[in-house]
Image 1 (cartoon, rainbow, N blue to C red):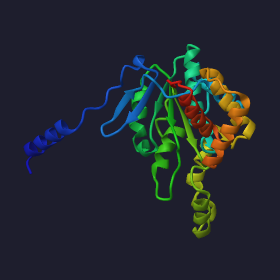
Image 2 (image 1 turned 90 degrees about the vertical axis):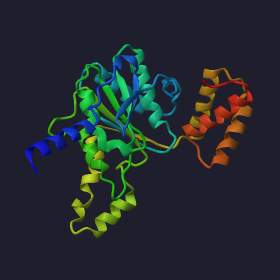
Image 3 (image 1 turned 135 degrees about the vertical axis):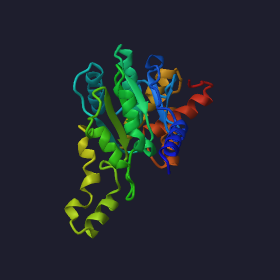
Length: 280
């Protein structure tokens, strides 16, 4: 094949290749969602979140994450954070509420949400964020890995940085129901069947060790559950006497078979609807 033919093929392939994604005007919004195929940072004007004061029973985690986020937004050193534990206890809500609280204090901080399935594209996303003057929270909700999942390798680029290093203006927050990001039975199975059990799952399990902050979330007590609902009632002006609220809320949790912040909000949503109040 002649050099001229090869050159024409190369030029044709170059025309077919998508142009590199340009970073958006980050002054237009405080929150973004990362999409792939094609790559795009989509601004979110109205983020679904609750006020930080309405998150009950997570005081220590709230204060720790808030201070860590403030430090980062001020250009100081801060840790990547893993929020792990019971379902429905406000892990993702806390991340979004802390971000809103820091922005309300006048600090420049953007939040970018990405899906676990898109972790393979994280290097392209970091390249976009690296050159910006803004600071970013990169947020991945419900993070976990299965036996044949290689996405954890991409996560290392965020936590450890690779040859380029994680950008100084990017911090990573993740939520997970699992402390070690993979099921316990999978860890035990791999250890029992491996030639060298101590090294069989070290690479995956040690991912959680790369987070500087571990914040645990545990099932709430009934008093905390009722306090959450009363806080929602006060915040939205819903009138209901204490005995009726307690009876209805306890019955609601019994029908759901669980008690959590999510169940408390679901009961309150029903209550507000019956009272003729729309939740915006």
